[in-house]
Image 1 (spheres, rainbow, N blue to C red):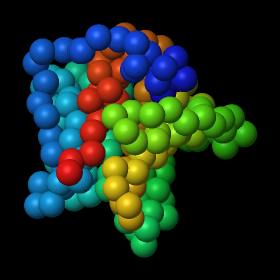
Image 2: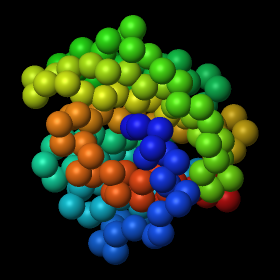
Image 3: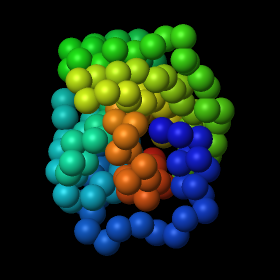
Length: 163
């Protein structure tokens, strides 16, 4: 995710009409997010995930506790590498913090490559309540990710803690 996408999340008006709001985890929700239906959002063991219709973007949000944070991050990186993503650690950058619906959100970003060519990878972090953390994983094909910027802004803009 580019810094411009994060900044635009606060400037753009409400996004797409055909979207599903997911509260997760379903047994004891701590957050909700609205994801376009054509991204086929689904609940996973640890959160939610979705892929853009053209498969250019993979996006997930996993719930972690203080005790499971390192494992959730390790699992996200393992998922990426198991799917052929090579992350260039030398390109690491910190996007800084912004506020999304009352939550401080920050991310670290990397360049990389997969079988389709250059990619951008981001790991984002937000705390919906004390002792809980949301880990947002983003993997986007650089050649086509810009076509999804409105949807990505909308997804981030919709991320909210559930009280």
